[in-house]
Amino acid sequence: MAQVKRLLDEIHSVIADIEYYITGILRGESMVSIEGQYKQMKTYFTMQLGLSLAVGRDFLNYFRVKPEGTKVLYVNYELSEEEFLSRLQEVAEAMNITTPGNFYYLTINENWCIDLTTDKIDEVLSINKPEVVILDPRYGFMRGREDEQSAMNLFVGNLKVMKAKHKCSFIVISHMGKDATKGARGHSLWDDAVDTIVRLTGSERGQQKGLTITGRNTEAMRLELKVDFPLLSIHEVMIKDSQSKVDKAQNFILDLLKQNNGAMLRAIIVKQGRREFSQNTIQRALDRHKANGVISVEPLAVKGNHKLVKLNALE
Image 1 (cartoon, rainbow, N blue to C red):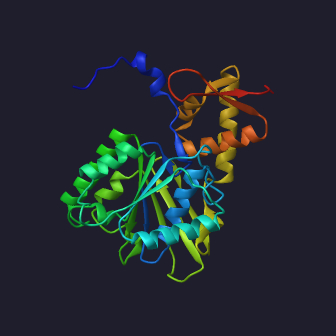
Image 2: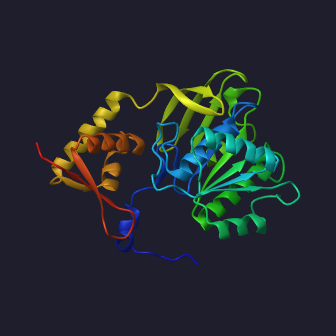
Image 3: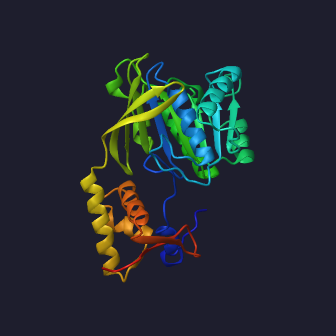
């Protein structure tokens, strides 16, 4: 039976910071869809992302990653284990990573991967306890066709159950149809279920790829990536949080701190600014202030993951 709780008892949990594994892309207990057509380097891109998470290195030298590292489980359905390990080794060597101790992988096949309610998947997550689970590709974990509403409902429902039970986030690689403007193939329930969509576009042999990121908790971004096989790197940020918007967020934070005696919980700052700024924009503004010595951020020894933002000097 569900437990009735008093808000006053849980207030610290209510305003606790939301943990981001990759700022603007992946947060705690969320679902991300990585989409692209055939031969768009989706697996190489996701391996690069997974290894960045595991070692705590900023993704694409742009997106902030939790520095202490994140435990990642990559569940591979499409490639043979030999091919998977060969690609992973290529990516790790290109990134100069020799000991990704937080990176785990599992190669499965159609003989036992029926859907995510299987005891084997549940057992793996219970024993391994990953923080982030990568499923490659989506169709390998579904019972039925991707365009069937019942099959998609079951898949999404299973993801949500696993996410809540194991306190983990899911990254799912999804194939796009012939018309890339329509997004990932399959039933539209998928787009409604995920928190963030990361989409790779471009020609099969092209040396540049387009990357778009859309989600509920971040402004839309469009970047141009350069291919330096097997890695991708950012060539140009074409559309992003505008400079003026981050500047406005910086001014907003300063005004808020001055109105509150120079100190506030970070979660309250995010909450106060959410009508105008995303959490990603607020975080970028905080990072700038911290780098310039304007503010300091201190953890609080109270229930939840709280941080106190303090103005170093009132003007």
